[in-house]
Image (cartoon, rainbow, N blue to C red):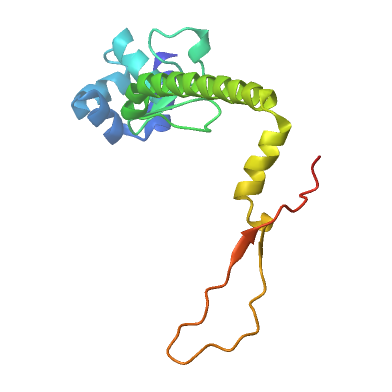
Amino acid sequence: MLNHELEELIDLIGGPGYVERALNVHRTTLLRWRSGATKPSQATMDVLRALAGRRLPGAGKEWEGWSFCKGKLIPPDFVWEFTVGDIRASYWDRQRIKNLQAEVTRLQDMVQELAKQAKSLDPAANDMAVWATDPRALQPQPEPAVAPRPGLHPPEPQVTQKRVSLGRR
């Protein structure tokens, strides 16, 4: 039974050459394991199973289907693969998310406070503020039809503020 599982694991992992390099064993050691002359240790079998994606050593049921391939941790759904850097960065990612959530909460509180302040303003004062800054409220006066005198600059167009209804009451 062990030989059958060992042969299957060797084939799944990528052949004898890969197993020799991955386990750092000599080819004669691998040949003795395959022939049944000696047995690989339990730790060796755990590593082979992990490399084949069968089982992570020392892991519980929640890790079933997870595997290692070319230095990456692969989940059972194969949606994403994790490098050592990804796993190390996950702490900082969580910290950044926590800080961004705090910033969003702070900004939401600020918006609510500003909305309360805006409601408490006098509506007429609010209209005046819009009137003073809205470009549609400025109506240019037509220029007088007077010819400029020689040597003088033409008069500057005069702009006066005139209240225009913006549809609010």
